[in-house]
Amino acid sequence: MTFASPFPEVDIPTASVYDYLFTQLDSADADRVALIDTKSGRKTTYREMVALIDSFSGALAERGLGVGDVVGLLAPNSSAFAVAFHAILRAGATATTINALFTAKDIAKQLTDSDAKMLITVTPMLAQAKEGAAAAGIPDENLVVLDGAGRDTDGHPNATDLLAGGTPAPEVNFAPSSHLAVLPYSSGTTGNPKGVMLTHRNLVANVAQIRPLHGMVSDDVVLAVLPFFHIYGMTVLLNAALHARARLVIMPSFDLGEFLGSIAEHKCTIAFIAPPVAVALAKHPLVDSYDLSSLNVVMSGAAPLDAELGQAVAERLGCKVVQGYGMSELSPVSHITPFDGGRHNMRAEAPLSSVGWTVSNAASKIVDPETGDEITPPAEGLSRTGELWFKGPNVMAGYLNNDEATRSTIDADGWLHTGDLAQVDAHGCVYIVDRLKELIKYKGYQVPPAELEAVLLAHPKIADAAVVGVQDDEGEEVPKAFVVKLQDADLTEDEVMEYVAGQVAPYKKVRRVAFIDAVPKSASGKILRKDLRTAQ
Image (cartoon, rainbow, N blue to C red):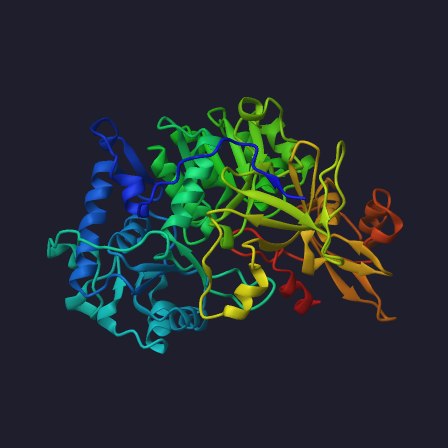
């Protein structure tokens, strides 16, 4: 049974991302600080940012880049990233954002698959960028190093070279409903990465869907540590915050001390995080050394957040903790808990264990993966578990050059099959159980790794944990825990197994344990289970 969004419908303008975010910039907001780089302390106002975007887009157009062209962007978070990203879209080109941790081989693969004509990067990533660009056939003059020495020194244009011409922003014409704005690549945690085709309408729609529910305002100060190259950071931090005329405090990478220090120094009111950061906020002693009283809300995404862990963060920081859900293919947000928990919109508060309600202008349903039958939301309590399906204006156009994968993900009726197992309660709140393909099948029973990870993270001597299915000596798939101990903690494999056994059904018990230094994760915070399976 379909359950529609309970939130009011929102207007989704027929506009490009640039027009939606910036053409209504009024004089009162123009001189507000839009971006602060924590490393340099540099501040950029909205007026300055838009002028830079226009100039940068003119430089791209002068070099022949526009509608139909793809430009790669490989850089950590910075104000320069924000300008370059929006300049690509302003010029009518398509941005394919590249994971800052990628090797040269990874970079070349994405540039080649997307048929990118230019790559924009920064000096710390130049070695792998140059090798990757060369392998993809991109010449030196189209490898832009924003903070580099410049074209006359090493053959690679820098930001100064591009902006020196003073070429005005181009006049471009395209249909926002079909023209690709961005081409991020799916994380590859469950298979080969695929180019996710997101149109201008997809991105505009998703900002329009989430803005009234976040309740973000121009006085908010938003800590931006989640990577802009990932769709979560791109839409939820960068675009939504800019639309709200808020202030973005930009960190190039996560460091707990710098994270806490930035909140304290800049009086951040909102922090978007992934669950690994929540673990540190709940358990690390360094947290007590900083004044974090300015924080009003912490929002977690990218992977399920355990309710007990979220509550520990909320109590320690004295702020609201909520979570949402999405995926690259959904631009990314499909389910959301408003910053106030839902009290204003829903007259009720979403349980912290849920990812909230279906976003505006959209609908969801939960389908039994074995039978294909739709699961009816219950009158009380939680529904049976099934695969979460979603339909809305933020659903991707498809996978680049992969019609088969597109058809297997989006059905003929327009429903996107998320591949995630979920439940729904009587109020329409959705609860993510696990990835459909990551369920462990033990003696016919389904064991969700995320449930066991939540139990493990509650242990006072465990800093982090991940669970995967492995084969035992009889060929049976069993849960194996990879555990990161807190510093100087004394903990044995048997103690871990006994602890979990005391809290779960017998068939869900952890049956093998390995202690490791760190759980491998993607830049967005998702556990790379395939790496753990390889390492076992």
